[in-house]
Amino acid sequence: MSRTLALSASRQNGWRVTVASLLLLPAMALGLFNQPVAAQEAPVVIPAPALDLTETGSSATAIFAGGCFWGVQGVFQHVNGVTMAVSGYSGGAAETATYELTGSGTTGHAEAVQVNYDPAIISYGELLQIYFSVAHNPTQLNYQGPDRGTQYRSTIFAVNDEQAETAKAYIEQLDAADRFEGPIVTTIEPFEAFYAAEQYHQDFLTLNPSWPYIVVHDLPKIAALEAIFPDSFREDPVLVGSL
Image (cartoon, rainbow, N blue to C red; front, side, top):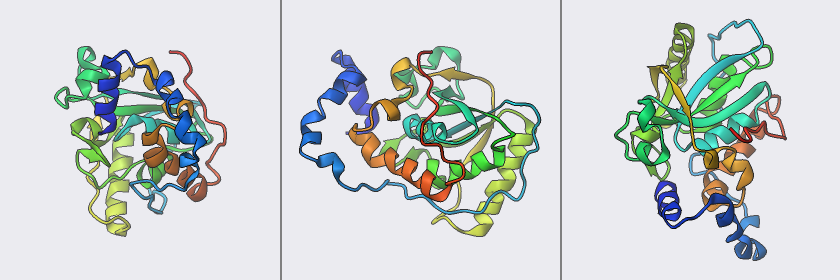
């Protein structure tokens, strides 16, 4: 069962994420989660962007979509210079910005993460490098791993023309570098609005590190971030808390 179907079915029965985590304790006692795991989508070591933004001020915003927002949020929460990373929806209308409706794949929304960052510490180009390298697989069209549908598409929601130009140039650079097994299918969409996801989706990776989907698909991304980008890695994630 995919992560989407499992969550939907469980919530219909009155399930809550924190309760589900307790059900995993017997398996943990048996040591099942002490075994080494590997991400379904292996990280790729890629060059830094040849073109980057020069931004002033102490705060800027980027919007990234790349499959399940649990892992994407979790990765950016462990990046130095990121001040907040919120899971949510972008690409559709306000009235359809819910997990259930977005999951239908008919709303135009993608599961996305709004990343607020300090340009004096990390640049937009450096965030792009992390996004393409460890946060997701940019060669998968309208899916990531077991999750299928346009809501899981690889998309950058550019908040201005400069971001769009930088992302476009980097995609062309990466395609020319030929580091991936196929062409990059990441699209660049103009940013219109971002809608925060439901509270139970926020900080999901940190709050549920033993959830099987997280163990298999997302924790290896955090390990890859630390290994490939040690200067950008922060041990303690910056969390959303209560919205």
